[in-house]
Length: 599
Image (cartoon, rainbow, N blue to C red; front, side, top):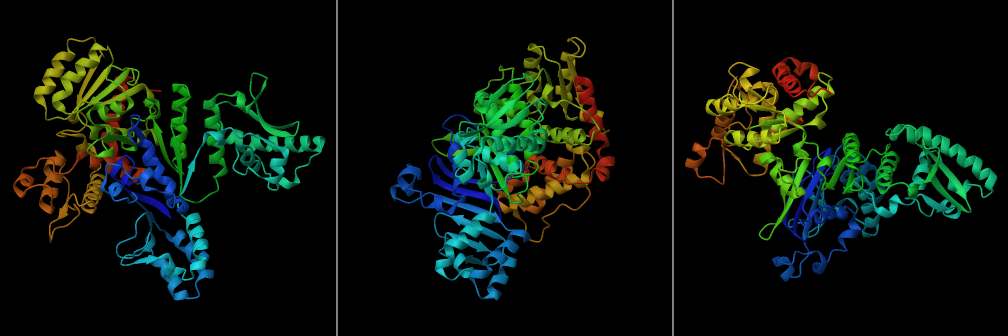
């Protein structure tokens, strides 16, 4: 069962928040006291026992009516069920219900929910749903005496959260008696030894010579199965499990020809190593797993933080990863939708700023405490675009072409900069010129006045300092970057985003109208000529008057469409898409050539 949605009301600094969890990597950024810790604390309530520990005095927002009325905060955790989880539920609950017809209804379940106050229709805090009905657990497990066992079964099937604690990272030394009794099963040392093939710790010999021979064999297995596979940063590193004076510990050998106790290594190394151990120990677990990391890499050098980010990206291909950070080096600018900026105000409490990348990443820079003059965040070379949607489209295309080996580019040596609109381009360019950075400007093709102004400035500069391109340089008559994209893929993104807005009640489908854009998209000015008319004709906006809606030039967020395009892009067969991406590849190769970005 996969956790997909969290609703929170009046929990500590949070007044109201709806968090739809995504796959892959999610980065939470916010100033101190913004409420980051309060948001990630919510994941503790996946364990049913923790719900009983909630208290009004500690957990309820003190400015809320709930606090005055001595009520608990509202927390709702919603899970999706798939065929595997339904099958496991059916099999494991079978001993607790003789009515097989009732158990067979599990095959139709779609969701499982945990919440702190009872469901109004069902009067239950923990319940299942199908397309039409809700069911308390007692429907499937009627004997109250069996409910604890049923809850344990459900908890084992649902999303697991893995958190790395400081005390866990340091548990690489145990007494021999502790190992034999397996009294600290979650320690790093025990997990490493299991990876090396130890299945029965009671068989560890207390005879020093026999134990030394056994640990030598364990160390050899460990380096084969773990070190070479998971720790590629330094090929000279080897692990040795050793026994001295009744204690078994981990020592590390490297190219300095010296053995180090794990405690002698840096805190950053220990954290990274602890993470590797946890991942390796879960490599065969098919459950939905979320790694929850609070300030990972805070003790690493910036180059180490970049390496850690690359590892987290690799990790997120199999597991979901949620992490908090104050470091710009742990944020990949090519994936702006990963970033959720957390803000806190007196009126709204703790909230997400979903467009942390807008206005040249201003919300994110503010959350990190960076100013535009903090040039260490920006790379030496910069690509300036008009809006945040351009960053998403270009970032996703660069990543795709890199992945398919159409290009080879080091994305760490340049920055995307969103000018916040065509009118802001000249001022942004002037700032960058004063810092003597090589820059490329990519503009829409409908801004002749601004283009001429920038071109005039370019001619006064030394060759190569400012490169200026318009979208129609890559395809005749094109106006914006959307005109270069594969039309069928763009259509899928538009329809997916429209569906999301309808589900969120931000748009309402007009009766008798289609919810999907099915016709052929315009070859140029696709937003103005195809997207905007479709949205205004087929939907209404409940927050706008009819006359205002009819005048609306941007009825649906360009960023929202770009966000869905990024998702759709990586679902498609590249060989099928390749022909339709010719102009996009031409654009990306031009950026690489003009800014000299080849790795």
